[in-house]
Image 1 (spheres, rainbow, N blue to C red):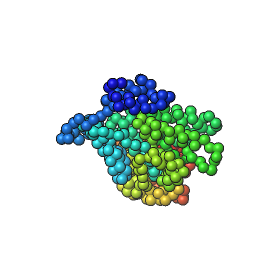
Image 2: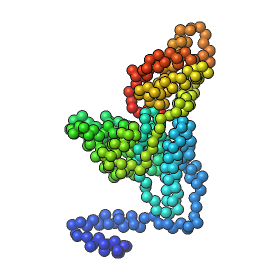
Image 3: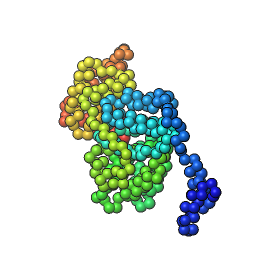
Image 4: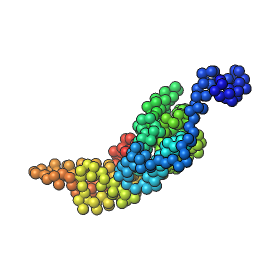
Amino acid sequence: MENNPLLRDAIHRVPPSQRPDDNSVDVLEGAIHRAPTSEEPDDASIDVGAMLQEFQVMEVIEKLDQELVGLKSVKTRIREIAALLLVDRMRSGVGLTTRPPTLHMSFTGPPGTGKTTVAMRMATILHRLGYVRKGHLVAVTRDDLVGQYIGHTAPKTKEVLKRAMGGVLFIDEAYYLYRQENERDYGQEAIEILLQVMENQREDLVVILAGYKDRMETFFQSNPGFGSRIAHHLDFPDYSLDELLAIAQLMLGEYMYRLSPEALQAFRAYLKKRMHMPRFANARSVRNAIDRARLRQANRLFDKGGRISKLDLMTIEAEDILASRVFSEEMPEDDHQRDASPISPL
C-alpha cells in the first residue's frame, strides 16, 4: 500500500461495498508501474524500411495490386490503413503512447468487385502487424448467424464468433440480418450479440460488413449501433469494360489459356451486352463466361478428333464465345446456373 499512497487513498474513499479486493488493487498498481512512458530521447528514430521488411506489409499490398484490376481508391485506403497501423507500431517502439485503432469496416458495392479478396488481404496485414492473433478470415451470411426458432440464434452466432476470434469476420449482405417487416425475426438477437463483441473484444476481432451500398446505408440508419462502430467505409465500384477484359486475361493466364485475336473481339462484344443484362456480377460473371467458353472449346476439340497441338489446347476461339445465348437472346447465360454462394474470391 505504501508503493502508491495516492492510489490507496483514492480507493479508501470508495464505500466499502464497492471497493476492489487487495488482489485487484495489486494488479492495478502493477499496471500503472508498467504503463508506457516516453523515455526515448526526442531525436530517437526508427528505420521505416526495416519495419516494412520486418512485417512484410508491402508484399501483401503488392500482391493485392497484382490480384485485383482497378479499384484505385480501395487500394489507396488499404495502404492508408496499413500506414496507420505501422506508424502506431513505430510510435510504440520509441515509447510514445498508442491507442489501438478501431478497425471494423464496411465494404459496399455490387457482387464480384473484389470485396472478399480485399478482406482476406486485410486480415493478413492485421496479423503481420500484430493487431489480430491468427489472421484468418471467416466469411458468413445471415443463414450462418440467425436461427429458425427461439433459442437457436445465440448459439449459432456465438459459434461463428468463436471461430472468427483472432481474425476477421466477413458478413456478406449484412442487411439481411435485420428484417424490420418481420417482428418475429431472430436477426435482431444476432445483431445485439455482434454489437457487444465488436465493442468489448475489438482488440481480438475485426468485423467487416459487406453488401450493396444503398442497402447498407439503410441498414446503418436502422441500426445506428453498427454505424458508430464502423471506422472505415470502402466503396467498390462496378468494373469498366476494359477492366473486365483485363480480369479475363488474368483468369485465362492463371488457367494457361489464351484468347485468339478474333475471340478477344468476340469476348469484348459479349461483355458489352452482358453488362447491361440482369444479375451481372462483374468478375464473377467473367469467370462464369470463361468456364463456359472452356466447355465449348473442349467439346469442339473432342468433336474434331485426330492430333491436337498444345496451342490448340490453350486457345479459345471466337466460335467458343459467339455460341453464347447472350448473342441470341435477351437473357444472361448464367441465369440458370448462378453461383450458389454469394461470396466470391473476386
